[in-house]
Image 1 (cartoon, rainbow, N blue to C red):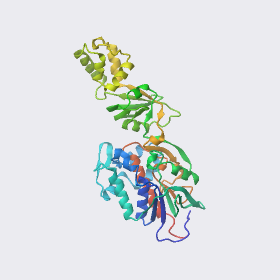
Image 2: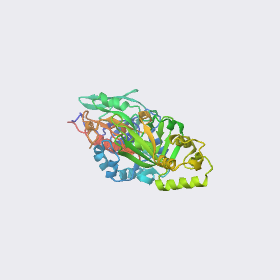
Image 3: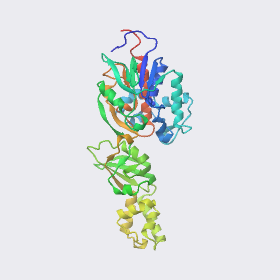
Length: 424
């Protein structure tokens, strides 16, 4: 459908959202010669981007397109075209071309050499300014349409006429950064289906009182395995995790949460290997040695040499060992139970924390209603989507930002190239 009524030298495009996807879309459209206005009410652009990766910004993942898609568990095929046209190597070349040196770390994770997310956001802002993208400090209220075509955006302060609109408002995670879910409402108002947003890369809730008893304890160099109801392994990885008053969090748990997707129909449990460097036989030998060297000491002291002191009371309780029990009274069976517990410390989980605490939102605009080759709406001509607003999300490691860059690039390019230049 062609909605433009006249020839223009410079096409007017409005981008809603000043995050990673929005800025990439605005820059790309402006590079194509479009006259771009960016709507963002925050006092600073890329507010959420600046806190990603603990402020370091995991820009992308240095891997192949196949590996990118393999790390997108939800609607990965939809991103095939976007990743084909803007790969992780293209992302790296883009930012290095803007003067930001990058480095690749463990697992292919790519960061600015400075370890500062502000280098990424500043480079985007400077590029946007050089291309004369107008930044309007305004909050979008609705998408304006006529005869099935997007013709502008109504804001709180004024109305912005446009020949194409790119919606890149983000999801519902970290609402303090501006991700309040407005984009879902605006998309729904013009006829789009919204898959219910839930949290991904989010802390998990446990009904196990032991978690609260160990609140604040961070475990390092452990292996976390997540099992579903059928005892099938759905996640396994080494790293760090944290006990909290509500359950568990930390990098390992956030990564695991992206694999635990069907809480209504399934149930999950976590098992922590506290001593992954030792097999059961080696661990038993170590405990036997510790006991032999401390026969007259309390078992509590033996356990304290194996786990953090915050965990000692929990271990004793789970094994039903009296705190005053002497090491020389520890039976072989009790020793084997201790080995079993250290290798398989189980934590029950009942669900994720609220979506506002998630790093990424799962759910959003239904991708079957969006053209994957252009990111244009199949329902409203001239309306494009980019980033977390879409019903696509990935695991940790730079993959979610790659989705933002690739879809933003695709939407910006398509919005500038498609309709609006010639009278029909």
